Length: 249
Image (cartoon, rainbow, N blue to C red; front, top):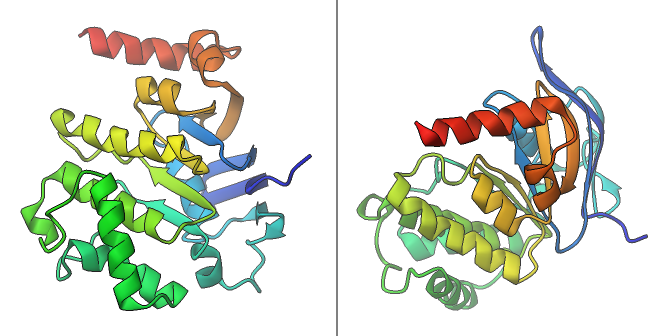
């Protein structure tokens, strides 16, 4: 058996009296895309932040390529160099233009020369439909364009895995498609991804497997079509029915 890129073992996290993660076990293999679905507050975003060491876990372990990353002795900056995190709120630097946003992490964290980093960034931006926008400031871009810049920035470092946290939730509906297309391109390239999403059609199309988080527990994980069409757990069935009913309103 090959070593998973991301291996989550018995992870728990509480904020005060509220348990957000209750013993999560999940492994993500190389070139695999796994989508996490569940209601708001189910723990999806918290789990991604724990993997990126933005939030400290209470118990359990998280491994990256077989190495424990959640030990207090581990340098979080070194871990983050191998992970690309895309936030739902873009988090672009407003004082930098598009190409500078994409190259900043490559030059500072990975020691790539500015000219080489710029050339690579322009090529990546072109792949995501952002050619001609390299010198623009984020404020001059649409929300969909800003999110694609954020995806390009995370991808530019060639991370071992990408963590995508509800990357379409802050967008107007007409802008969602262009961001999902960028993620599809990553999938076709074989990028390892863990994706928190509320877009069930997208999860079905892009994810190899889907996991359902409910009240801090990963109730079931399975191939995307199987879980979305014939889930085992009643809580999963209720969640999917609610989504379907909401779309009909």
